[in-house]
Length: 346
Ligand code: KG4
Ligand code: ZN
Figure (cartoon, rainbow, N blue to C red):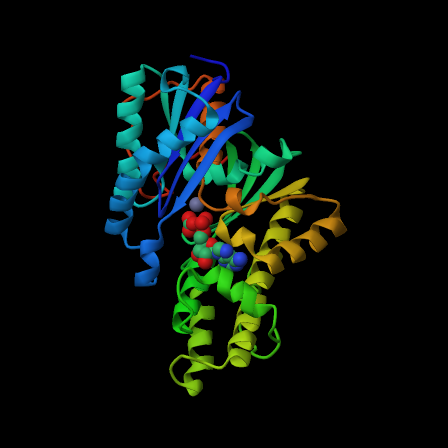
């Protein structure tokens, strides 16, 4: 098969969100459902075994609902796409096993999509193709990546985190402050009422060349700052100041490195992806910096920032249009480094 599939069903189960999308002609979302797994809130983080089990329960009815919403019968589907890497192995296996069986039963091609590659292009669904070269910043609970995008499949890695991901730092700090999981949205909200200069937290790696990140030292700085105040619950004004100061350090770091990457490759666009791209301060600061440089800023709506099957559908459709061989026996890969993504455009 080559050419863009008319009706493609995509499945995303790489972490703790179960998502299904139906994409028409590589452009139009006929259905897009995301089932968040609330069970992890009880544990203050994603529990892999529980995530796999929840995918197993949620996925079959979600596929039925997505097809019903799209008004598409299974036998009308032309292709399937599924996230095959990177992610939690057990979670990926549920989606891939389901997709293989479904594609085999329907006799349609199946392609395995790289989740990070999908985040790089998610903004395309709402903003159209980027002017190139572009830089993509993917900031989630598991990843902090800066990538030069020269076209579909043509990437050069500019920077990654050396330890914690940006979202992971939000989640760990929120847990430390007794604010529950996930930490990003609640800290984002609290930060709006606090003083970003109340605590002088470090801006990790800003004094070093390159576009790599490190967030674990910042988390330690928050631990030390909160220690004299004892255990949670803390008074709201203290929480607001801590949140604002922590967020200022994260956002300063992300914005500085992203703009360093943009300047380095003379990018014409900056695309965002990942749950942290929902952060209001980050969005506002990047808008100012991109505005100064005349660089197009492409931020997807929150549903397309977080883990979602729409972006998997988009990249799956592009892979089939490019002529990639369908892979009925595809296997899952946990790590980004081994996920087969072209990481150097040469
Ligand atoms: O992409 P995502 O939904 O899942 C993966 O981690 O793959 O991202 C979730 C992450 C969590 O760490 C969460 O705390 C963070 O995104 N997040 C935010 C905000 N909303 C979600 N971080 C900062 N500000 C936000 N508004
Ligand atoms: Zn993700």
